[in-house]
Structure formats: C-alpha cells, structure tokens
Image (cartoon, rainbow, N blue to C red; front, side):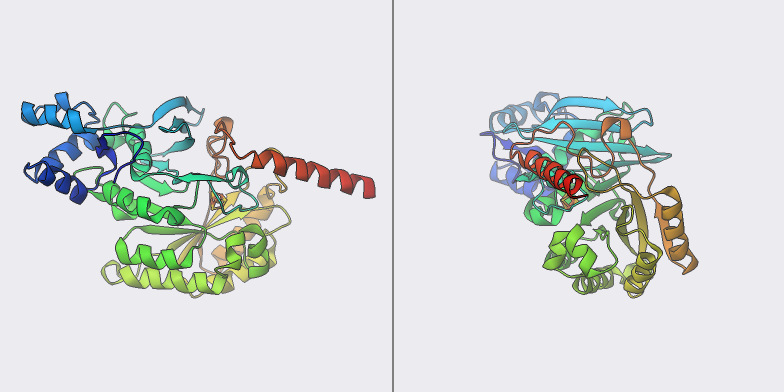
Length: 379
Ligand code: SF4
C-alpha cells in the first residue's frame, strides 16, 4: 500500500478499496474514501485541513497518521511543440521522468513504472541505464497527479490518455502497476476510460495473461522485429518469450475482453525503424505474415538517436515504403510523429537528466567507442 519511505500512510497510492479499509480501521465510514479520493485526485488538494466536507476532528486525525506525498519536481520544461516533461525526484533521491504530449484534443501522459530498466533493448537509452528499482503505486500515480495539476482547468482537462511507456517494463512491476491502473480508471479519482489507458510491454507473456485476468485496459507490444532472430538481438527478452508465444498471449488477451467490444479491439504493435536493420521490404512482408492472426495495428516509430547509439534512424522514404506494404495489405499502420526532441522527451530518450547510478551507460559507451576503434584500425 502506497510507498514506504515515510512513517505516515501515503494516501496517494491507495485504491478505493484500500482507502475504504483504511477508514474502516480508523472506525470511520466507508464513504470517506470517496471524499478523500476526490479531493486528492480531482481537486489536487493534499492538505487535509482544506478538505472542508470532512469533520474537523477527522481532518486532524488524518494529518497525524496519513499524508498525500507527491514526488518532488526538480525540472519542468515545455518544448516548442507543447510537449511537457517533468523530472521527478523520489523520497530516496531516485529520479524518473514523465512526459505529457498534446495532440489536438488528446493529451497523452507517458508514465514510468521503474527507475531504469533491466531488459536492455538495444535501441533504448533507458535500457542503457540499467535497473535501479521498481516504483511504488504512489510514485506511479504521482506522475499523473503532477501532470493533472499542471492545467488550470483541472485534472479532467489536463490528461486524456495514459500510456505506461516511460522508463521501465510495467509488467515486471505488476504488484504496484495494477493498483495504479485501478486508480486511473476509478471515477472517484481520474475516471479515465479503459480505452485511454495503455500498458506497453516488451512481451512478458505470463504477465500479459495475468493483466487480462485482472483488468481491462488497452495493450501495446514493443515488437520492433519481424522474426525471432532479429528480435532476439533487439529485444533480448524475446529469447525467453519468443514471438509465437507472444502472438498467442496477445490473442488470449483480446479474446478475454472481446465479448463486449464487437470484435473491434486491436493490440498496438510498436515498431522502431532502424536504418538497414529492420526496415527493409522483406521485414514488412514478414511482419504481415506474423500479424495475420493477431488483430493489431502497427505504429512505426522513427528511431531517436542518443549519444553513442549503435543505430540510425531509417530514411523517410524507407519508412513510407514499409508503411505502404502494410497498408496495401489492409493493415492499419501509422507513423509516430517525433515529439519533444528539443527536451529529450522523445521515445527511448527517457533517461535525459536522470542520474545514472550504475554507470552502466558509460561502460556501454566505452565499449562502443572501442569497437569503433577496432573497426577503424582493421579497415
Ligand atoms: S524499450 Fe522499454 S523494456 Fe526495453 S529497455 Fe527500454 S524501457 Fe526497458
């Protein structure tokens, strides 16, 4: 429940059910949970003294045993295209980033689930940072709370969509993720529609099944390759959960929630475009064959280079040719617009100013430089 850095219970990370139990244990009525949720998540109020529909003695009691503690904002910036980025410091000094991307009426918040990431996808700057720790539910929701409070028109206007696509693999922090998703969907908190909350995974097959059993949200898969040999290299977790198993898990996920959706649901397949690596016409045709049995749409992501990255972004013409092969075959295929480049908020760049405690990225950069030097000498 919540995070454990302070002595008081942090109510920010409690679901409605957990908050009800909290009040029942205090000998208070269950409905207090709804009141407090509304104050905290919809009205952005952290001070119990300001919760005026709660009797004063209870407010004083709450102040003694509980708190509403958000991460500390150490950096906030708005890019020229309106993309906003926050670097947040947590109680133990760890830092994460969260990014709000406006696009017409849609305002999508990209939320982090871990500090760093253990999965080491080869095109991802977060992966180069190494894994530090899981975020608590309060730390995950804290990102949404901060973004929600950034709009003077209120929480309902500030964020319309959430994608669990920031730092970390959300399904490897499942116990903290699930309550966070429940709070996002709860009408007493953020009331986001289940279609507007997306969990993005690199393909942790057993946890995709578990997610499907526990909650109904949209699913995205970081696919990035059209065959196992290539995916083994780019997304190493593929060696554990190969593409056939991943496709079967995606089908099971859809089947579980299909009945009330008239079969219209699809998995979003994220595919980063790496020049000369996975962007050739034969890759597009292979991808079509792979996705033939998975109701899906493909989102092509032009690669965002980061210092010492071993890949380059595919040319515009290669991306368009790849898209055409998919679209001509009847597939829905979009190209993600690169956003927030000038503040390092683009996909795969969520490492920016975050401290690299493991120094892994430096070792990795040195290795790349050494390899380049060996190549230069031998050519
Ligand atoms: S792409 Fe996602 S899962 Fe892979 S290393 Fe980066 S943060 Fe981790």
